[in-house]
Image 1: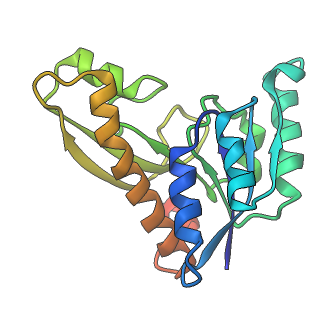
Image 2: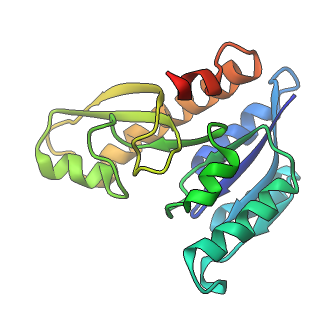
Length: 197
């Protein structure tokens, strides 16, 4: 059984999809803990699904590196096989990447390397492109530049807003994430090999 720790900053829609998937006894992965960098709404999913939660508030530490060290200690307690950044709206410091990558993965609402960073959907709308996408990557020390696990194109429709486009991207992100977790658990995807290539 693949053990996942999922880190969030917000409501945790991708997290909910993973929790729903892992409620199936046949699904070969379990979320063993949910962590956040703030008092995130998604932490309530822990109580709903009976999964332990923790918080490592960024504002409680003097700098990003100190926060990262505390985050490493907390995540390691759960001995995860894979750490999923699921809407964690903060760049993790290099020590976190060194501790967990390549078993550190992140969803992104764009077809990378197009539109990296925190505003991928807004940037796609502003650029006037006719298509964008969703990506799942191995986290490295770049900004959304790690090895690509999976990605899919999504059309930008006339009249799309940031919100309407993001609403169409999210289900694709969830599907890519759940499929990748399945593939990792079933040894069809080797993150170490992907990171080396």
